[in-house]
Amino acid sequence: MDRLIESPVTPVEQRAPGRWQIGTVTSIKTETPHVKSFRIELPMWVPHLPGQHYDVRLTAPDGYRAQRSYSIASSPLDEGEIELTIDRLEDGEVSPYFHDVVVEGDQVEVRGPFTSYFVWRGEKPVLLVGGGSGVVPLMAILRHRRRTMPDLPMRLVYSVRQADDVIYADELRGDAVLTFTREPPADWSGHRGRIDPELIAGAGIDDDGIAFVCGSNGFVEAASEMLLGLGYEPQRIRTERFGPTG
Amino acid sequence: MIAEGAGRKLRPLNGFISRGFRGRRRTPEELADRLPPGQYSETGFPVLTAGPTPDISTDEWSFRIDGMVGQEHEWTWEEFHKLPFEQIPCDIHCVTKWSKLGTTFGGVSMDVLLEEVEPLDAFAMFYSYGGYTTNLTIEDITGGKAWVVTEHEGEPLPRQHGGPARMLVPGLYFWKSAKWVQGMRVMDHDEPGFWESNGYHNHGDPWKEQRYWTD
Image: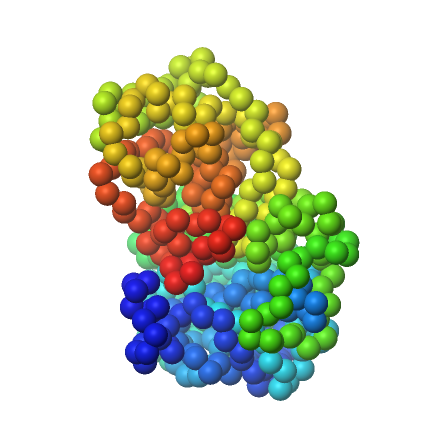
């Protein structure tokens, strides 16, 4: 594998993952008060698997650098570009840069797509369980399923704090069941509080499927324990946790 | 945590500068040399696990070394705790970019464990309760470079960080330090473990920034 990619002249090299490249931000969407989605056009785009991530690297004029990883939110059917959805972390250094500095037309240095465990390869049925911005890689999976296998059983259980924290709100439609842990919308008649077995059962996905769980460590810990209790085999629960990074 | 001066003063090869970026989380000067490229200093201890957290009691825990060895050996919790136990101050580096500088684990050196079994070959696969695997060479884990640890900062190792026992190989990215470790098999060939099969580098030296397959 290494050898194939290192070979200097083949066209494969240009499309190989893992090289730093300079992308161009083509659009920015404000999802919530502290979450934005960035569409980035790439000169060396390769199709990703839904669930994979890119690394982003910022370089200051004196050479100081900061790197972080962000999940891809878009379907690999969006050729030539990726969407990264970034939660602004107050004490972070990369996410505040994206939120406060980056404008459409800016260039950003990225490489990817990376890692192939927390990815969807067409298995079914699929239960997606997301907390907060943990919904991002799950959205890539949901978006890709809508465009490739719309009838495949897949449901998102999505936990957010309050009404204006819902990322991709206008896109979720009937594919998601939501719960609000603090302040639901005024007319909310659905689930309130943390996710519980009843909410997960209400998603209507059989436990012989595969579950993708993504969120803070506490969220993932609680949700995966719950899935084990509901009969999911440990090998059928894939998790991705984010700690205090930014 | 935020101070001026750190970072590696390397002029970017491609000359790319991120417009308007200055860096606000620079590592203090006295710690900067301990931070490998692309890492930032984190005072917490984030958790990264590919699946649910295994629940292993110390009664059922044991550590076994087998495969290409002169004499296989298995230690129960009680037997393990009769071995020479040491405190290991170290820096740890996670491939997801955070580093934790100046932290201390307590455990038993692989040098002590390997003395009992006499490895006959150069490669090893570590395996864990829950099914995780990671490959290391014997060279990577001998000469005071690897430990089986059961304590962190003087306390029993928390379950979410791999308790009751995990590997500690601070010289490599932290996915090589298998949590809930159950044993090690000495092999006559190298074979990728779990993350090494799923995109992360086969060796994982943070100072060479060996994060992914193509690095």
